[in-house]
Image 1 (cartoon, rainbow, N blue to C red):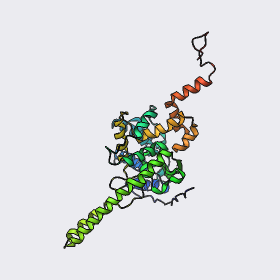
Image 2 (tube, helix red, strand yellow; image 1 turned 180 degrees about the horizontal axis):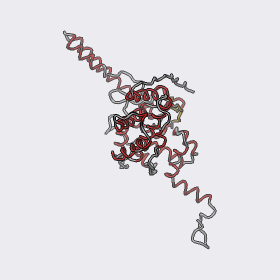
Image 3 (cartoon, helix red, strand yellow; image 1 turned 135 degrees about the vertical axis):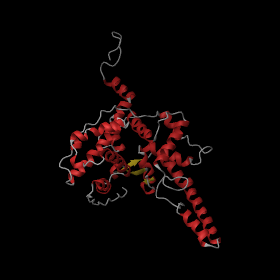
Image 4 (cartoon, rainbow, N blue to C red; image 1 turned 45 degrees about the horizontal axis):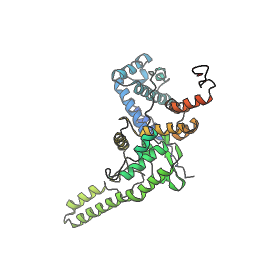
Length: 353
């Protein structure tokens, strides 16, 4: 079993100014609760919106009647019910923090009611679409086709989120055991299995295409060094070299990198998946999360238990995983026809079901 990363707790101190409370809260969720970076960014954006609405008013002086106007303001700004619900959740956590620090006596944000949300079924690719998508990166068209195939295989083989894929490190992948270590939300670690095809695609990327990227960077750096040495004035050639060399990567701890050897951005992964999805004629709203949805749905279709899928996806609550039972109507229909005593037709009646 690979060694687990150790997390070092830090303490956050509360500022005295109301404007600085937000900074103390963000420090608290990042250091003490050690929430994911993207989660901290979401809290920050939501609470900045709250502070704009707050204006010159004092948080301890707010009444529930005044605070009840905040969801209406969010609605007027055009936010969807899901976004309003997330903003109110951020506000509740922030007020809970202030109660714990003795700033507030009670969390009146708990009295706010989140808007009802329609349950949206996730977009799922068929197995045929998945098969075409995974081989769509082609050597005659795509410069980084070896890397792109490895990324797509990893997304579908593990069901990882986009942020988890781009943050995957080389020492998180264990090819000899056909598994990898995922660091999910809240820095929770989990070992995920890899299929043979995903292992082969990753091995090909690591042994062929990835070393070429850093070899090109090394050659470029050497050319710059020679140019700097030839320059009679270090101020001219030297400054150019030292400015550019900061952007040259000769190695990276991350499993998947850009053509310049940098860590792959999450936005770049979204663009990558969407590009190949459009080329195979898939819906325009396909994203890396669609591969995660497809992974879960296809696992259920092939007989996996819901609890097992919950574990593989890293969901805390099985209620989150249950949405895939709504997507997989084919399997539910087969179970019904197989097990319900009146699901078949006979000669005396049109249908028993």
